[in-house]
Image 1 (tube, rainbow, N blue to C red):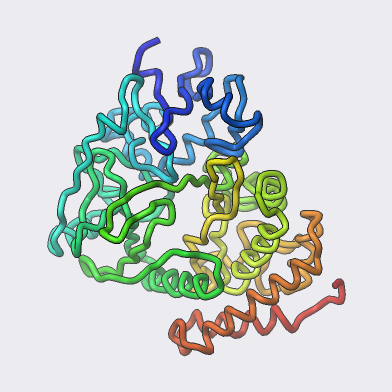
Image 2: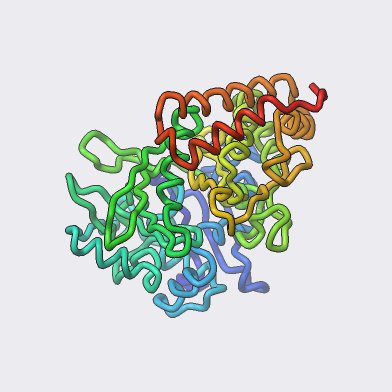
Amino acid sequence: MAEADRLIAWLHNEPIAQLTRNKRQRDRIDLHYDVAVNEALPFNTPVLSCSLTLSRNRLDATAFVDGLLPEGDFRRYLAERARLPAHDSFGLIAHYGRDIAGAVQFFPAGQDPTVDAHWSAETLDDHDLDEIVVGLPSNPLAIVDGSELSLAGLQNKMLLVRLDQRWGRPLGGQPSTHILKRDHSDYRGIVAAECEALAIARHAGLTTIDAWIEPHGGFDCLILERFDRIVDESGTVVGRVHQEDSCQALGLPATQKYEIHHGGGGPELSQIASLLDRYAADPLGQLDRLAAVATYTIIIGNAHAHGKNTAFLLSRDGTIELAPLYDTVPTVLWPTLRREAAMTIGGAVGFDSMNLATVEREARLWQHSPVSARAAATRCAEVMRDAIQHSVIDPDGALAKRVMSASETFLATDDGSS
């Protein structure tokens, strides 16, 4: 087999599996765990993904790899730079798989990232970053020769690495520390709203991500700390945290990230709950957290909380937990954006019709205590109100008004089903 058709998946600087092109279906990517991994952990343990639990058999890793790559025109652009077809997920991850979501890296057979890595970073001054930000629509992820990175999604964004008090562009697989998102030309202010939404999520204990706004190239830019990187006091990346989104965890392609919109077929909250019940170290605590996440999504009105924006952290012992919230956009603040949930909650779709009883109904679908889910949802709604009352964000702003109004409706409305 040609070396180009075989990659080694490294996790936490250890080789754990081989990836190959399927001989009969060239668009399928096969994965085979190494013998040492099979001997170290029980069968059916989630190592790389909940959809790729430990086995001696050859597994279909197509959806997992697909989920590490950008979507749409951004993917086509990266494919053109690599002189590959956009559908060639294997070739793309071979080209861009050094710094991607989570802790996994992909290298050709025979290369050792602990020895052969050639990390570097291009220092960016304010003028450099301004130019890059302006050019993001025509150069997704700010890719240059030497960029070996990939970031899933459809937004104008790029990866950065903190270099003392300056920003740098990571090269040669250098681990990035931050993500920059440029404000949307058609929905000005959307990154500022996301920044405020994340501040509320931090106050509610639903995320650990620090985020702020910086102006670059005439645009507001949201700067996000990566939750899947471990950084020491000097700013050096000393480790990676493994994670995957719920599409990957369920073996679904990124094109199926919505449960009902855009063709549907995407992850449902009940499927996410099932994975937590099966693999979490504290399933009941995680299901309560999922109820709080659903509550937060309702109250801020985030129609983009789809399968690509709901993620898991995977521990080395094979247990999982919900990842910190990220990509939390209050879409209801823009009249032309969707006002319906990406995932149904208790059978409901419209945010304005959802309340505590909705979350209880959803919890019953998970076979989780509706009383416990109600308590978690109530605490979340009350803490979100507290964030506004203590001016965690501008109490006179649009999001603050949305949270106060929606939380009041959420907590006051009850259909008596408790």
